[in-house]
Amino acid sequence: MRLRLPSLLLLSGLLGCSSTKPPAPSPPALLRAERLASQAAKLTEQENWPAAAQAWQRASEDYALLNDRAREAVALHNLAQAEHHVGQTTEAHAHVSEAARLNQMIGQTNEWWRNQIVLLQLEADSSQSNTADRRFLALLPLAGSFPDANVRGLFLNELGLWRLRHGEWMEAEAAFNEAAAVFVRIGERNSAATATANLARLREKQNQPEAAVELWRKALDEFEKLGDPHGIADALFGLGRSLTAARKDLSLAEDCLRRATGNYRVLSRAQDQQQVLKALAECLRARGKSTDP
Image (cartoon, rainbow, N blue to C red; front, side, top):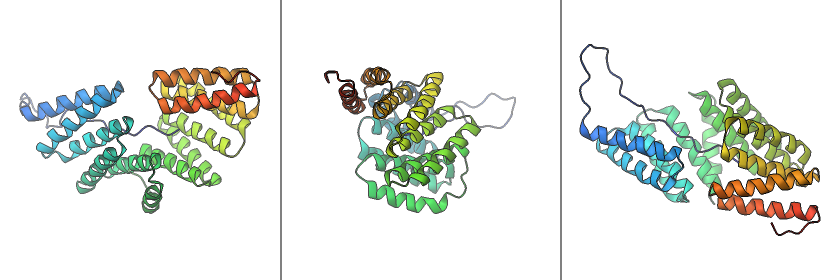
């Protein structure tokens, strides 16, 4: 489990000086770009990723025509998010790399860090693990201070996942705990719940299923309060998997895994659905039941 790709919000309007005069009408080309970006944002919220990708692509092109590099970078960043969801990893990497180049050019440090976090996620999710390692090693010396607390938490979460992949349990735990503390302090409850879920995954890796169960319960409770369908599905999967490993309350484990299977199907997460079906078969074997789901 990981935090979703961070998305940058477009400004709803332009800053202007205080005046009794009515504001001058926006140029038609700018109105078109803003309309496309608004449409793309709605499609992203609806998780209509193919349509969102098309809309963000057009918005980025329109902002490029206006030489508005800041908003072009936002559109490219969100385009990469949509492309990642439809499996276009190469295109997503290229677009968020271009967003990072633009943000670095215009001095948008906070946005540049968000781009870097997305690049780390893309590289970790693909076969580019060596590239992710090099990027982490390059970023760690720069991570002493972040312009934004939320970005710091996101980076710490990714750092924890990186440590987890390398089997560095203590370092991973420290990163996840620090990330969770940051998110709690700034009121980012969803991100805090995801950090808790990542701690649960760490306990699974450490062969401590009973400790993982408690953390998955905590994460599930928080995701339910937040009404987060993806987080709920992931936590149900983790809870069912950990209960099976602990050989405790296998009837609940089966129920969690069956619910996770259905949720992943509705959420169109086919790869995760296949993984939970394997876990369900293991649970059924542990119960002495037929492995036909």
